Image (cartoon, rainbow over all chains, first blue to last red):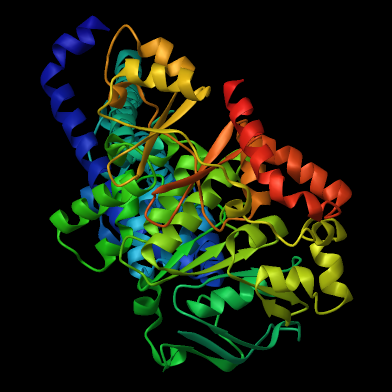
Length: 211
Length: 394
């Protein structure tokens, strides 16, 4: 194991970086699309059911299949990998944004409106700040998914830590398989830890205080 | 100021929540909408800030048809206090108080000044401005809820059972506070409640509603003495009708002259005065007779070794009633708070009299034997003075 690390230290850094980079882009794209979409959906209950239905179906497709389907359209490499991962990050964020926005106390929304907030102000000043903890936990979940599934992206030539695992499988080198798997797990745990700090920081202070 | 004409609201399915309501509310009036649940009182109130749009009829505010106004701008000009308090948990108290000013894009200085000025009105310390709602008790939160409805100088304030979720003592304090603020700031308040005691205590006029219709709209005294029909009689309850019978004595009829002292006198002066007048409580007033506080035997003994000035030893937190208050209300306050006595002040907070526990005895006497003893009236005042003084000694 130690041999694996010392002999491949250069490759480890490079592959980890690649892995992180693919997952991060997919996650950021997912946030950019899913959070606003979730907010809009929370105002359109009927459309929400249809859209959330479609995204949950997408979620059930096997990830290898999606990656394979991408090849005829986008070829191989990082782009199809990022797009496939992006699709996977959508549902947890979308779902949590929708739930978070809907779980904001009705009385508070009514209070905001009756004070003279417009609908947009109500979203910006009341609903979104109060939904942040729920939205953030959706983002955390998506981040961990993205990192673990990015392993498969190596299969369509996107690089990343998956390369170690696939190489290990092809060359029958168990230390490559285990080393790659451990690195992916560690990366996922560290990311989740960092995002939990972000979640704490992003949660409005008034929701954390105690009497 | 506010004129409601032929106002109706029919919900889907044909349920008439409000049925041909006609009302006129004057500026500076405190009006209570009261009724059982489903009587349409909340629906009626919410049509005033257009949280609910009427099916037919018109509401005029200073002669202007509300339907022609922008609902968002209208809501910013009308204060609103809701039952569940509804403070924003993620905003500080300061941000909560100045929520409407923020929507109106006031400058930061103006908002800060408003928050600092307002929090004093409800007897909360300045440093509460930077706390969050979850750090305050329910009663304190609702005080802030009331301030939030005042912050942008709204003339009209709508209150939807604002004190319903509070414990009786906190509710009582907040009712007093609300009435005091309303009178002092000259606000028009429309108050929805199902608690008749609350309505009688606070409202200048009470609007009794049933099945969407206004059954009676009149002053509390008139409603209690002349209920419009059997429903109103039943709604207000027979016990209140009887209670009100001793033709509503006011505190001015029974109050005695309190013993006062000015704050620049020394503690020794206070003790000497107490011994001379044989009382245990002195009311501290300034040169114009404004009530500043009180000093009693306990606070004197406690402060005797640390200070010689009355202004430091006196208790500044003093419960009082205004002259003209019904005797019943002040007695209720004495009993609820377990006070020995309660000073009476005029509009400018000048001390004019004192109601003591002896008056409770009179109340009980009155309700049991009524007004049989008219011939004794001449010296009964004298007696009360005596008992009053005795009571203060205890």
